[in-house]
Length: 125
Image (tube, rainbow, N blue to C red; front, side, top):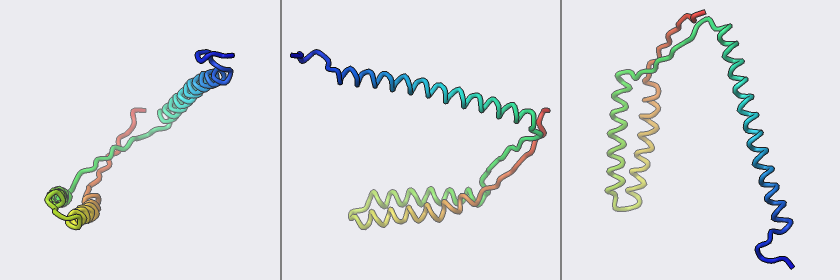
């Protein structure tokens, strides 16, 4: 009869399966990392041989975008204060809906009030 401290065949097989799974995960992960590094090196070599220029993008707010950002921040603070000072659930819901409305209205406007500038530089090749 086996004692309480002796491992059974099932426990040994479970341990062996766990070790095999760990080895497979480490080996497979290492192979995936090596393939990704080789792909990045090949892409960099191709880009270096074929690149004629590179583009730098700058994205800045317009003056109207700055105004809308300030209005959005103020509206958010007012909505938060209204929700914090609310005495009923309906007032809290109204403050939340107000904040969601501000996020939609001012967020979309804020996104569209950006000026993008693209600068093209000749490559060193």
